[in-house]
Amino acid sequence: MEEKDTELQIKEAARTVFMKRGYAGARMQEIADLAGINKALLHYYYRSKERLYDVIFMEVFQELMEGLESAFVEEDSIKVKMEAFIDLYISTLMKNPHMPLFVVSEISRDPDTFIEKLKTKEIFEGANKIVLSFISDLNNEYGEQLNAIHLFMNIISMCVFPFISKPMLGAITQIDDATWKILMETRKEEVKRFVAKALEKR
Amino acid sequence: MEEKDTELQIKEAARTVFMKRGYAGARMQEIADLAGINKALLHYYYRSKERLYDVIFMEVFQELMEGLESAFVEEDSIKVKMEAFIDLYISTLMKNPHMPLFVVSEISRDPDTFIEKLKTKEIFEGANKIVLSFISDLNNEYGEQLNAIHLFMNIISMCVFPFISKPMLGAITQIDDATWKILMETRKEEVKRFVAKALEKR
DNA sequence: TTTTGCATTAACCATTTGGTTAAACCTGAT
DNA sequence: ATCAGGTTTAACCAAATGGTTAATGCAAAA
Image (cartoon, rainbow over all chains, first blue to last red; front, side, top):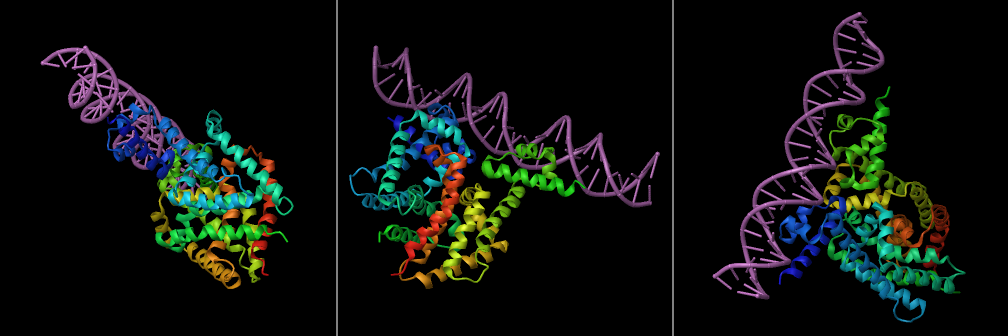
């Protein structure tokens, strides 16, 4: 059947368009064109723009959180966890470079609605618990040296921000895509070393 | 006269609305309402939405770059410059928390147009030169320990990203505004210490 | 072969939205 | 007082846009 195929094609098209343009900038017509279907069919499968958007947004958000969680499944020392996280998260973002900017800007567009949506889903529970336990672990291990929340922010920032600022950086410094890929690949080691050195005990 | 007053009021309203909603999400009517004037008057002063937007965007972008530059005017050691930058940039962002997300998402919405715009302006020259000389300074001083570009990214990331991710972080962890302010205030010292430690020579 | 029911489309519709126009409104100069 | 200039507005317009509807296609069941 074409059933699932069509629905999937719509979702892929919607994902591309929403990620590129944001909710306000996205056009139902463009999604339909990209999916190779009639615009009315969008409304047949997903009643409205907002519902379609919700589905896409939650999927992307979930992926972002899963990427975060999966670094923590193994029972290891906090240092190993940290390094696993840095490796894995940068790799994830190299595959999906548009995800973080999309998620972050759409949340700040309407934080209250986002909070409401979160409450109904279970994604939140997992991610939230893991973040808090990570911060608590950091605190036990490095509490005397550094505020754990700041350490957490530092790590996340160094992993995520380069992807968010890439278009701007690229415009200013004219880095081509090949160079960028190498830069992000070497970045894993650099960030790990940077953090490790900053946390060295003496 | 009301002349400059009206024009200024339009610009302030436009800035607020564009920063909150982005180009696509902004409505000329909302800008007019916020400025307390008739919508036609917007077109009287600025011919179109795009022109008004261009003015606002370039102003905000310029402010962001000036903030970056002003930390470097003094002829000091690279370490002092770095610390001045961290202090000053976090302070700037505390006053204008929406600036970075606005700039970054609008650039990535249409990087080519942004590059075109940049070429015609002089803002670029200054900022670009300073960034490159900063990276070159970093390289001379810490080149053996760390790739200078990554170090530059690290510092910028740790300063800027918290403001970009605040709405998301706030939604997940329920940090109130007072706590946030304290957190960002203490962050200046934390980031400086973190960077200093990571760069210590032995 | 006919029927049934979902999938798909062309044509439409109502609203929103950026933009225009012609008239009204000031204010300072004559 | 009236004239001339820019400023401001109410009313309007055309295009874009999300959404609907009624008809068509089409495959499996009868």
